[in-house]
Image 1 (cartoon, rainbow, N blue to C red):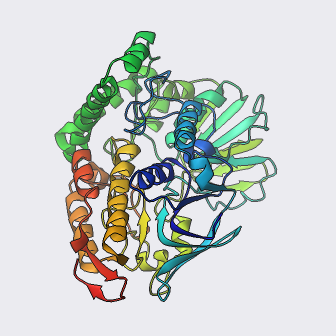
Image 2: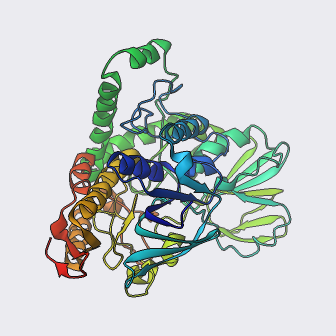
Image 3: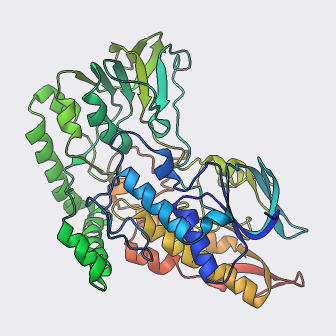
Length: 493
């Protein structure tokens, strides 16, 4: 393959796949995807832990342009999603446009050449445009706990599950109680002799209205025109109804929370255990978790819930911040990802030579979550301030891809060499988002969550509806950019 391309896409997950497909449809043929792994799938390739599944209905958690009639359940499992994503990529010929096993080590904007230079494990690449599609659920977060590195037993993160290690009959400590743990804990509880769950913060868990998809429904999806679109519309409407509560937490989210409280009371009869599992913040302040087996598994005789953070490890002993201890053979980390401190920001340098992380100073910013001033001809998919607590990542990324495809196609058509979002446009947008977040459950729910960055600002969440996100984020406006033409003269759009 050539070392220079019009567009280089970093990452072959759902975002990168969508970007490459839509760019090709717009006539941008010289697109290369670089992927550090050996196949498509992104987070659905990396996360193979027991019980891994989606918590968004499958009809919404799929590309709008590639409907799937064969989902086995309302909420698809990881193997199904991975197979679907891989199939869509290969059907659109992306295998021939992807370099697998190639990691981007550094990227910098070359002002004189008006292009991006990317140092990879397979040599240098140059590109007129770069699309970062690595996603926020890319790099596992491993906590710095004293003694963890010296733990003599098995240690792995849920996103790097060691399937060669047999958990049967083992004493296992699980650190973290987020979305991944809620799925894998019920699965491993059946195998281990003792499970010690170290829970720094209790989580709200709602019942998951999951069920197998009936054959008749699959038949309708295959044969009836617009059936997929109708199903997506129904699921979208239901999810957006929940979204209203995020923006109006009192009394709407309190009403939804009553379901969680009733579910907890019905499942956990032991008052002491129930007290440990009862959150002290409003539902939705952290990511809402759905499970029909997590709370049930915590009531089993081989499970001990430690309502505390882990202070340190001493040999095989886990010591909680409250002084509790547990002797274990293995440690499984369900401690999430580097979502707002993405490692990619440390290796991408803009027009002034500074990294994106140096620009951000702990608080990620991007206009419409997609372009960052000082980083011309670069786009980020699933970037800052686009996360919702109720909708599908596919809706977000497809809106962003519409934006970047329009921008790149316009540049090609009109002879624009450089697009750089105006700093005042980005600043005004960030102020609007932060102001609108003030009254949402994300900011006013009374908790500390991964939505908050190193400076305590919410750099993750979108404060409005998904419809508003699609409308605003998909609309490329040249007036928002400083544009340099091929004759190197900056001109108004």
